[in-house]
Structures are given as structure tokens and as C-alpha cells.
Image 1 (tube, rainbow, N blue to C red):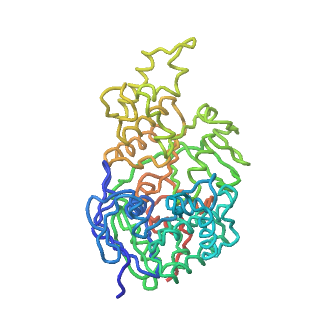
Image 2: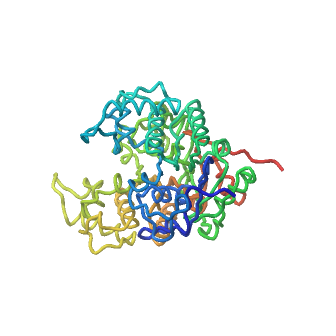
Image 3: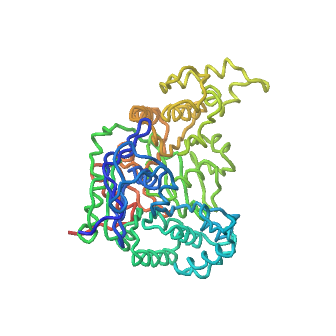
Amino acid sequence: MQNSVIKLSGISKSFPGVKALQNVELELYRGQVTALIGENGAGKSTLVKTMTGIYQPDEGEISVNGKVVVLGSAHDAFSHGITAIHQETVLFDEMSVAENIYLGHTPKTKFKTIDWKKLYSDATSILNDIGAPHIDAHTKLKEISIANKHLVAVARALSVEADIVIMDEPTAALSHKEIEDLFKLVDKLKSDGKAILFISHKFDEIYRIAERYTVFRDGQMVGCGMLSETSQDEIVQMMVGRSVDQIFPKRSSSIGAPVLHIENYNHPTEFADINFELNRGEILGFYGLVGAGRSELMQALFGITRPSSGTLTIAGEEITLKGPADAVKAGIVYLPEERGKQGVVLDLPIVENISLPSLHTTSRNGFLRMANELALARKYAERLDLRAASLSQHAGTLSGGNQQKVVIAKWLAVEPNIIILDEPTKGVDIGSKAAVHSFMAELVAEGLSVIMVSSEIPEVMGMSDRIIVMRDGLIAEVFQNDDSLTAETLIRSAAGIEEQVA
């Protein structure tokens, strides 16, 4: 049995209300690719940040070449030969390719100034070594393609003589040909003896490039081994591995006539050929993996972005959304995934956050009536059981769950007909999750219609009447959420894995 280059033992990491990693194990081996597999939110990103010194574990230890190390910073990770290539390249457009490659460790002259000649010479040499001689080291980064930026990120990784290379969804923004070129580069890294951690949701890529696998679920390592000895079925079962019915009891629903009809919705880069209906009193779930285009579609339905073609019809009337104000006027509201950036104004008090979209009802003759504003905010804060010292407390001081309640409250105050929830329980504690789910059930019981985007299979199966699965910007399949639907079926549809016939 060969020795591992890096070994993580008993790693745990917690955040307020969330146990992100629980006693996880991981080993990477020289000259091999280990695929890290798991649903969104399984703990993969937290593990990568722990390995690269961004987070420090609460428990456990990390060994490199048999020696226990402490990775207190990204610089510490660099010094131990650990580097990461992310889905979105963390590089600087206004700097040259060579400057990006050697940022933070530029070669110096004897006078401690940058040795520009050596900088460009060494950068050119590395680019040649990785099969990218077409990239000019003197070119500004903003002038090259996304695929070439990934190659620059790889060159940067190799410039620190890394033995351990982490590739986090590296193919998400690449074409088929660019993916094949990247795989050739991975093969070269393997032949050079690098230990590689490859994170991807795409099973065809995993089986093409990796020898080993490790599966995470709910912050725990639930399986590992050789891919040659493990079927896709077994890995899917490891990814899911839980009873949905126990978490979300079935609810009764009374679904009415269609209230929203989307026909041939297209966007130049995000989604294409989108067709679906939403019915009165229905929760319509949207499931998919990273890059599926779900959030981008929801933003178009709320008027944040404009589709290139297609029609949106509400209650039989075709409507053109020029912006979010048009959507709100038409009865559509949207709770974004990034609530801290797009949902609440962190520096404003709760009362002003809740009343913000409803100023026309709390004002008269252009003057704000504070008594009306306070009454509106109190009504919906009480309805949602918002926990705060007072309504004058700033939203930025609230927990994630209570911030989410503020966002829900501000949109309920405009009395919508359709509410879009994008990852409604992301980053909130279990108690707040239950409150959000209970409230969703109340909304549809009152006749509202809900579109829910979720990356959590228990949530999307536990709450939805129907489920639309998106993949690569397209609607892959639509499922009626009945007793015949399984978590494995959703995973297969989202990842593009065909059912195996016995």
C-alpha cells in the first residue's frame, strides 16, 4: 500500500448553528486523482478551505509526507506544496500573465527588487511545460480567454513547486474541447507525481480522470475507495443515504389553475428553451447541480436580467418585465440566494427593511408616516416569529435565519401572488429551517404559489408538489413528486446518468 502525500484525520469544523465537517478523513496519493463527491452543501468547500489554510479545523490533524503540519494561512499551505485551482480563477485582469503566475513570490535580484527578466523567462518556461506555449507571458490577463485563464491558474500552482493540487469544479466554464485539453494537463500532472484532489458533480469526468473517490454527505465522510471497484449506483446511494419522509412529513395540498406560464424562455449564456407552468397553491421545486442555471432563470423571472426571447404570462396576460418593479407590480417577488448582498440592507433597521418595498402604502403626499411603517413591520415580524430585541435592531446583527425572515416579511407585505425562494434555508439553523418550511405550507394553503430552488434533496422532495430538474441551462426532466420518485432518480437526472437496466 503506497503512502499518502497528505492525510486529514478526524477533521471537524463548526460555524454558528452549522457543523460543516464532522470527523472527516481524506488521503491523497502521489500520481493519482482522488475525486471528492457530494451534494451541494456536503462540506466539500469547507474542506478545501481547511486544506488551503483559509479555515483552521476545530479538531483533527493534517499530515504532509507523514509529518503533522499546521496550516494557519494560505502562505503556510503554499509552503507545504498545497495549491488550489478554483472554478472561478482568483487572478488579476490588469496584471500580466507572468505577474499573476508569480504573485506573492516573484523572483528577486540581489538588490531585493523584482527580477523582471527572470520573471518572464520562468513564466514562459512553465507555460511551455504545461502545454500552453500559445500564451504570451507579457499579455495582460484580461486579454486572454477563460480557458487560458485556467491554464494560468495551473501555471501559478506549479510555480510554487506544489505536490498537492486541488481542482475545484475546474471545468464549469469550459467548452468540450477545453475540458479535454485540461484533462491532458491533469494526465501530465499525474505523470509528474502530483497528488490531485478533483471536485466535480459530473460523473463522466470523475470516471474519466480519477482513480480514487471520497464521498461526503452532511459534513461527514461516508465512503471512499477505488472507482474501478465501485459503480455509479453505489456512489449515488452514498451521496443520498437518508429518508426524506422522516424529515418532511407529507402535507395535503389543493392545487388550482395555472397562474404563471413560461414559454420558450432563452438567455444568450445562462439558459435555453425553458417551458413550464406554475399552478395556484403549488410548490414547484427546482433542483440541479452547480452551474445548472436555476438562479439565473429565477433572476430573469424577477426582471433582474432580460431574456433574449420567450414569453411570461400571468393569469392569461402576457407581461414584459423591464425590471424588478414590473415583477412586483405583476405579483411576483424573489428571495435571492445571497440574502446578505441582495435580500436585506444590513446597515438598516428591521423596520425599514420590511417596509422598503411598501413605501407607497406607508407614505402620504410624499411623506413617510412612521406609525404606518411600524405597524406594517410589526404585523409581518410577528407573523414570522422574528426574534430580535426590537424592530430598530439593524438587520446585520441578526442570525441568518432571522435575516431570512426579514426578507420574507418585506415581500409578504406587498401581498404577492407568486413567491420565488432561491435556497430559502441556506446557512440557517435547524429551527429556522422548520419555521420557513412551515410558513411555505401556510402560504400555499392560502392560495399563493411558490417556486423553490434548492440544492438539498430532502428539502426539494419534502416540500415540492412537482420538481423540475435543470442541467446545463436546460430543463432535463419534470417529475410529479409522488411515492415513485426517489432521491437517486433526481441525482441521476441532475448529473446526466442514465438508468441502468438490470
